[in-house]
Length: 127
Image (tube, rainbow, N blue to C red; front, side, top):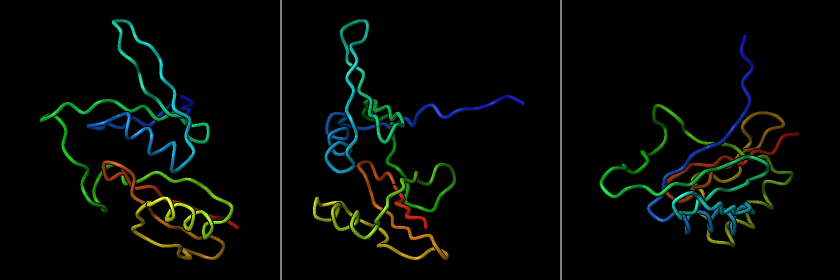
């Protein structure tokens, strides 16, 4: 069987620079700008070792993200050691949460926040 490895998440934004700055300021992502042939700049993020590409959403050609739950990609998750402290820190930075810290099952606590373009991110504390 073919072995698959994780490559990236690709986001579309009407303002890639503002979106990248949000991920940097709120979640500590590193912004990576790579010059492209023809003079453009490719804008990527390194978020905890995972690649996130951000591309410009062409006006009139991209729809807003639906509200959860819906079919298709629902959210992505990030682990934290202390979810209560992480949520307090992010709320102090103005981040909106759709679910405050909740015990999902024994030993697992979760919370959900909303990133630009209605991207849903789950924070998970295990153990």
